[in-house]
Image 1 (cartoon, rainbow, N blue to C red):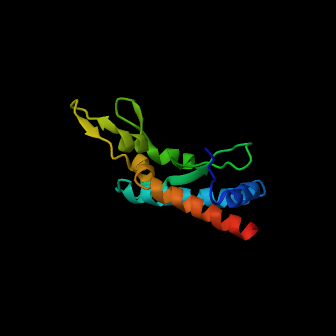
Image 2 (image 1 turned 120 degrees about the horizontal axis):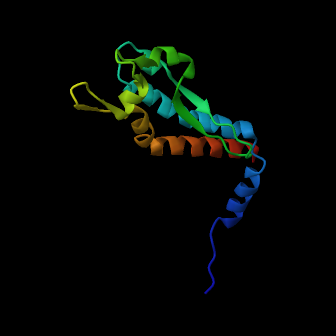
Image 3 (image 1 turned 30 degrees about the vertical axis):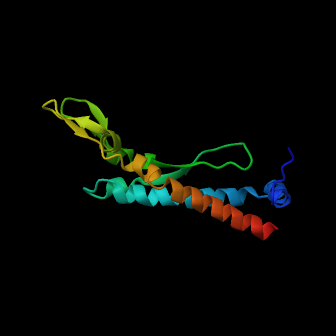
Length: 144
C-alpha cells in the first residue's frame, strides 16, 4: 500500500524554519497566552480590598532548553506581609491559599475554595493554546 501525504513538503519547510525561530518569539507568544489566564484569575479573585487580585503576577520559569518558555500565575512574594495572617491562637495561614482551596471555620465547618487560579487556566485552555499557536505561526510566516 502506497500513501502520499499532501502538503508534506510544506510541513517539512515549516519544521525546518522552527529551528531558526528566535527565543524571543517563543517568549512573546507564551507571554500572550499567560496574560489570558492572568487577567481571568484577577477577574475571578475574591474581592474584599482588591489586594488579592492585585497580588497575582505572571512569573516565568527559568529553563536552559531552547524553544521552551513556561509562565505561571502566582502570588507576588513581595506582598506576603499583606497575605500572611496569624490568628489569635498563634496559628499562621496564607490568605490566597485559603481563598483558592477553602478553609475550616472555628466551629468546625468548611468553606469551599473559589478555585479562581485553577479555573482561569482550565476555562481558557483552548483560547490560550490557539493564541500561542497563531502567534508562532505568524512569526514563522514572517521568517519565510
